Every structure is written in C-alpha cells, then in structure tokens.
Length: 214
Image 1 (cartoon, one colour):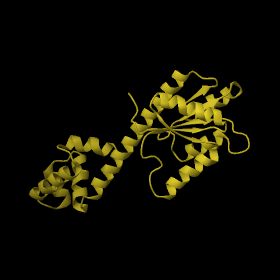
Image 2 (cartoon, helix red, strand yellow):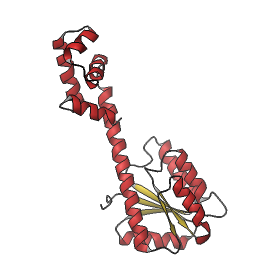
Image 3 (spheres, helix red, strand yellow):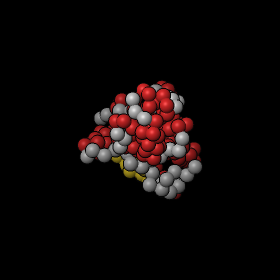
C-alpha cells in the first residue's frame, strides 16, 4: 500500500551529507521529509507540538534515526524518550547504524524499534521499510481517530442512555432492562433507539463490537 501523500519521514543525523542524500532518495519515491541535525532539535520540535496542545502527529510519519551522534543526545536516548511517551507505533523508528552498532540496533528492535538499516544501505530496501513504517503509523493514527470519535459519541449520551446501552451490550432483553432500571419497556425502546442513533449502529451486536474498540 502506498503511504498517504502528506506522510512525513523525519531524518535525524548529525552528518549533513547523509541527511541530504536521504532526503533526495525519499523525494525520488515521492515521500516528504524533514531533517534535523541532532536528537535535541527533533525532541524540541515534538515538545513544541505538544505545548501547542495538538497531537504529536496529524499525519503518518516515521523516523530515520542515527544510532550515534557524538556531542549530544544519542539516537538511543531519543528512542528511549519516544518509547516512554508511547509513540513507537505512531512514529515508528528505523535506526541507521554502522557495522559496530548492529548489536545495539538489534537490541533496540527487540525493545520496539521498527527496524534498522546498516550503512551503507540498499536504497530500495530502506525506502520499502520506510513505506511499511508509514503504513503502520497511518493505521495507528486511524485507530486513535476512531477511538476519539467513539468517545465523543459516548459523551453525547445521557446518563439514562448510558445505563440502557450498558445493559443492551450485556445482551439483556428490553423487559429485563426495564425491570432493572424501574422504567417501562416503551421507555427502554426509546432510549435504545437513541443510543443506536448516537453511536451509529444498527444492532446490539454492532454496538458490542464498537464498544470493544475503546
């Protein structure tokens, strides 16, 4: 699957020639990129996005990250920071590593990195993995958006509608719901219809599946 046109590949490497070469390579495959010369610069960009109150990523993204960047925060330290923030599926990390750091990169993959590519890397293999990482990011963001929409729908329910929804999801018939809530069966039917309408479902089975996505 081809990543969305507005997906972004973030490149973090202290070597300007590497950043430029990767950006050019990505352009040849019609992929957008943003480059950063240090882990600190990239972390600061993310912090600014959080400070503005918006999501870290609005569109799919992935991170090409050099393992070693002498003189500042290492790629591994940035990776650990992203892991602690729960961003590894939203922003998959592909490490760029020299031969001496392969074992370190393998360990990072075991801890949640998407992959690593050893320098010098195969252009096609790297871009293929980038596209796969972007597709993972896109799918994760879609799940987050659907969960947010579900929460918004639930927030629109009245307290009584939530009571009815909970019991409908448990598989109770209208008569038992009416008895449990001390209301008429007709009132249950009205609330049930409103719940289905607000939640965008047509049956109790659909409702159960929807609630399981929370």
